[in-house]
Every structure is written in C-alpha cells, then in structure tokens.
Image (cartoon, rainbow, N blue to C red; front, top):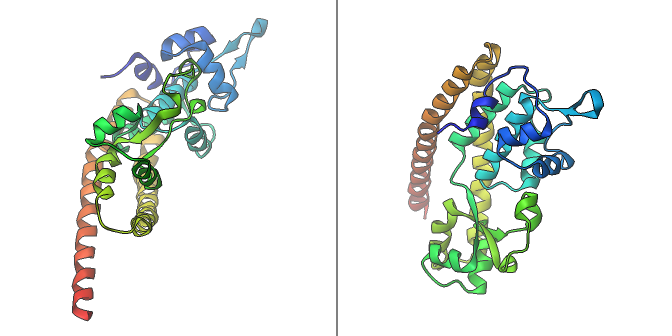
Length: 263
C-alpha cells in the first residue's frame, strides 16, 4: 500500500514545506527531523525570510528512504554510511528509485526484541554461550538506544536485555547451534560466503546501475517510472537469487565430485 509520504516523494515538483509541514507529510515528529539533520541524514533547509527554513521534495524522499532502511533493520549509523555513498545532488525522483530498489531487494529486516521474545522465536531456551555464538554469526546484536529515533530512546525496563535480531538468519543460526562443527569453522565459512557474495552483489549492482537505472534517470521524472522500476526490481530479485543459488549448488556439486575423486 502506498503511503502519503511515498506518493509525495515520488514526484519532483517545486513544493516547499516548513519543518512542521514536512513532519506532517513524512509522519514523523519535528524533533526527529532536527535529530536527523544534526546526524547529517538530512541536508539543511533553504533559509527564507524571517529565518524560516524551507524543505523540498528531496527532503521528503530522503525521509522515505531513511524509513525504508530502518524497516530493513539498519541502524542510524549504517544509514548514515549508506547515504554518504549516494551520488551528490540526487533528485527526489532518484531517491524514490533508491527506496523502490531497497524495498524489493532487501532481505527480511531486523527486529528489536527482548530475550524472552528471542527465545520464543527460536523455539528453545538460549544460554549465554548460545547468545555469544549467535552474535558471532551476525544473527543478533545488542540493541543500542542511540540507534533509535529520539522519541523511542526512553528507558525500557528490559533495555539491558534487548537484542536486534536478523529474523532472516535466526532460524539458520538456531539450527547451527546444534551442529557438531567447531565455532571457528562456521565463522570461517561465513567469511568466505560474505566475501564472494559481496563481490557478486557489487558486479550485479554495477550492471543494474549502468543498464537499468541509467536509462530511467535519463527519462522525464514521473511517478509512473518509479512504479515501473519498483515492479521491474521486484520481478528481477527472485530470478537473480534463484540463479545465484543454482549456480552455487552446481559449483559445490562439482567441487565435491573432484574432492571425492582425489581423496
């Protein structure tokens, strides 16, 4: 379902907003906007008469992108690094495309939860050693209050026992807790997989940017183009994932065949 912020952010008109109007459009508080500005997540407004700041569609689109990145489980520090890597001067239309791609390609997001909820999701009690192992595998991390927006930073009765959980990895991580393989071996395998999948992701991203995003940027800014990009990205994602899985399975099968032949 498309929100009011998404509909507004998908356009490149010349509308400007005061900080109160921007907050209302984006569905956040003025305090959050100012907090994001101090963190460098939002560019400064244009100062008009009477020292009133005026925000544009690019601010609204950036807020929508930040919201999507948070939904995918990224901390504010990670979002800051992500935004720093974006090309300068992106229009509201470009930012809307970024959000569409993030929404359709990102895996299941992370969630903050208590230890009781974590154990309920895991389907078993988790010892301190289990938690350490899950943390080492990147499945969980302690939820830091400074990574939350100002209105969510109030003290929580379980603040010292809350975790940020990668829900997409939780099931696999819990299964690996019972696998009789050395912890170091699991971490080494994870490192190998991360290095090679990042390399593949980099090349695929470059291809997507040059062959797909480039032509879209050259066309007139139009919400319909953003919707088309979102649809195209959503259709490509499962195809690319399946292709990667199939290629990996075939490569692994060949490696095992050679290994068994030589052993």
